[in-house]
Length: 270
Ligand code: FES
Image (cartoon, rainbow, N blue to C red; front, side, top):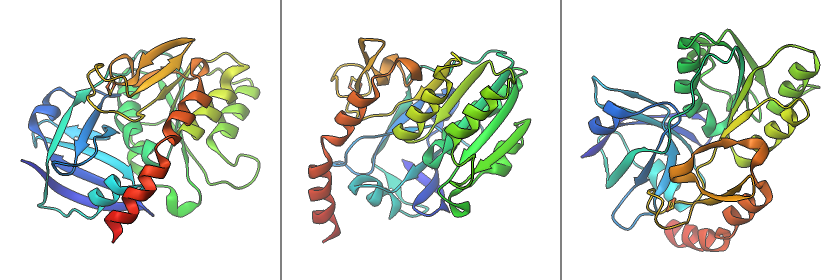
């Protein structure tokens, strides 16, 4: 049922896939995510929506190949079908006319940034997009993001503005008015981006898709500490204020299954 319509490698180990999923496409909003299972016994993988087309009945995801489940997904071809996709899940992004907005993204986070940037632009914001990559080969979709951005900046780990957090810090220090920041990428990138805006007190929204099982707030697998309270990323998020997140706790939970992940990957590879 959930047929893969297109598959393309956009950067080393980063893949964009488009699936047939008409019901999800008809109600998706920026900031929401889906949970994918490759086969009946597969792990449930939460992924931010990187786009959708209601007419075609398709949805887009961008993922980084890391671990058994995404490795399995990466071996699937156009015409193959996934076991199931649940969604759209989570609260949509808060889209307002904030004024001047920075959208920082890197790696798989470039995907969900695209509908966000588009929605922010349509609301009348001045959108400054900064795309981060470990080198030029890891930077992609600047053209797509550029369609809806007033400025697009690329940072690739070199010089004084090496990473997205350096860019944020420099923009804020230069005295330019920035009303809101959004960051999409790996937890480390979102943490340092939040740290970069803390002193200036500019709200920084990050998107968390930690380990999830049911995606409906019942199992507790996706719990994160935000502002001293336990929140479930699947129903309370996935977006939260980056300054309020207990990042150490989040990283600890993400790392707890690494030995099982390694074991599973070795078995699958054989
Ligand atoms: Fe079960 Fe969020 S995935 S509570």
